[in-house]
Every structure is written in C-alpha cells, then in structure tokens.
Length: 218
Image (cartoon, rainbow, N blue to C red):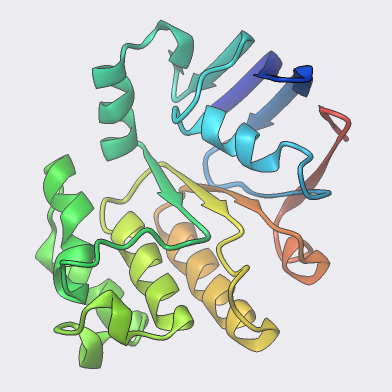
C-alpha cells in the first residue's frame, strides 16, 4: 500500500479555542489508483493533502507513505520524500516567477537528481508547451500555467501525485483537457493520484471517490 492513514487527528488553536479539522481519518491508496477527495469548503481536504505530502504534521495517528511513517521523519527526510516520492500540484500553480517555462519544468527534476531530458521533452510536447518555453509565468494563461505546474511535478516521475483543486482556476472545458493529460501521464508510470476537487464531473473520472465531512471520510 503506497499511502496508509490510521486514526489521523488534526486540530488548530484559535482565539476562540481549538477547532478539530480531522477526527480519526483512515484511508488507503495503492500504486496506480486514482482517488477524488470531495467535501465542503473548509472541511479539511487541503489539510489532509498537506499531511500526506509531509507539508504539515498530524496531532496523532499514523501517516505512512511508501513504507515510511512521516511522524518519525525529520525535516530533511521529509524534504527528500517530497523531492523523490511525492509530487504536489497546487491550485495557485506556485511557479517561480523569475524562471522561464523550461527552467520551471526542470527545477524539481534537478533538485531530485532525476533530470531526464527525454522525459521532459516528451512532457513539454504532450502539454503543448513548446511555443512557450522561453516565456515567464506572467505571460501565460491560467491553463498554460497549470500545464507547466503539472509537467514540473511529473518530470520527477513521483510514485504519488497530490493535486489540490488542480483545475479550480480553469473553465470546465479546459479543466477536462488538463485532467485528461494528468490521468494519461500518471497512468503511464503507475503512480497513484489523489485529487482534491469540488467538481462532481471531474471526481467521477477518478477510480474512487471519498467525501470528507465533519472531519471523517465516507
């Protein structure tokens, strides 16, 4: 099992007191599986994604990724896991404004020591990004920026791809095209895909669907 969560709890302290976000979440995800995570705004979907990606830590319970219990890892080990095993696609793209498209795509691959020129060229071609390689993010449309963000993550061939509302800034037609590409490319490497989405249409395209409500999955 690539991803395993056992009785995961997460809360945040605020001026008004403690707010429970996740209340005993259990979940499994195998290599090659695609899973949609849905839920109301503020239900904790992004929090859960961040815990799985090692971007935040659980209060209690176990988050195990590729056989490694995240709570037992230090910051350096977590960073290494994100470089080589887990790829995160953010809704806001998070491209580096001072780098052009070519360098944005290659950036993560260089960090992970997995810079495969042929793979990057293939991703660029299939994402339709050849005419834009020398452009900077500010000159791209939202759909083009999202394609760059996806290519950057997939350039490292991660075992697990986490996508937080990856099409949230796109219209329905553009969102469908981007998801087609993402599913195709993830499927070729037998990676697992966990996608947070508010779209029932996109969620229906995934192999499984879980709904987060009141801090629990159903």
